[in-house]
Length: 399
Ligand SMILES: O=C(O)C1=C[C@@H](OP(=O)(O)O)[C@@H](O)[C@H](O)C1
Ligand SMILES: C=C(OP(=O)(O)O)C(=O)O
Image 1 (cartoon, protein in one colour):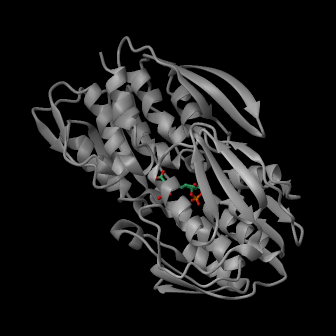
Image 2: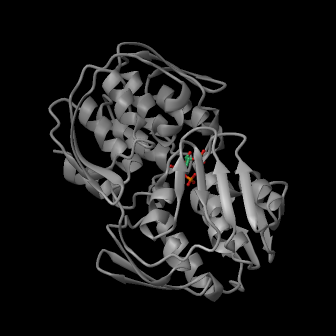
């Protein structure tokens, strides 16, 4: 996204070919940016914010919440007209968390009661943007920062606590003067960004499935290479280690991001209470953490994760209902789960559903590896949203 608003060519290496990325690529092309692929390198040729133009068509964000929220900020600040839609699941998810702050600083965005479809009406944002988030949110913080950058406004965003910080790190890589003081991020007016070569680390949210598979499958032997383990994202590793997981990590740092080769080993896990500030650092990994907890000795309680209800599916309900079909001892609560383990998972050609949610489908595929009997996953298409080669990789791993 940042490549679209700089002058020059940004080369992005190692980009996972996910549907989210395809969506972003298509949208940026509609805004007038040239994007080409050369092997595993994506080249984005930007000519500055003033060169972006109105898309002229309705922008379809498919299933991607993060891209929708970040792009809304970028477009709102760029003084453009755009209409945004998404699939059924995305159309049920809240967008007011970015619409309200952006409208408060001069944007003019209308929506269907805080949901898609949304219309961004051309508007000049305030010269000075000061925004304090009511709840910790990396997406809202990034949307306001991107709006501030594209509108050239002096911008300060104060988050509730330090949330994932990829946007700040990448803005710095592009030469922006980003000042980070705990959860307070400031950017001066009129930042001139320059194109950069960017290496995108492997996504820990995707690696999480293999990490847990390695811990749960006896005799497994695998290393997941080049995974981004930025501390604002890697709560799953701390949690699993506290559950007595044996995980070896070899790490190095590239351009402000920590990258690691991760080797999980079969482990006898122990139950854990999981709550508080660690939750946002592992929110997308909770479905697979719940699977790990079904195999841990004792009662695991996960609290403070109500945000899961607002994802591609209500993940508190879908994780619980599907794992119960395999015999897991699990109860849904208002903001999490109570899981008793270890439970031998069993199936007899048992049908389970991913509920059109990529993380639920992948979690169930890993669950099938430790289930006695045959599990039939009724829908696996959703996996393409973040990990199109997931089943090919899984096929390579199984013996
Ligand atoms: O920036 C991101 O890509 C994300 C940030 C998190 O949201 P918030 O920190 O905005 O709640 C997370 O829940 C979401 O699934 C992905
Ligand atoms: C980040 C995720 O999805 P979205 O961008 O749709 O919120 C996710 O499920 O991991």
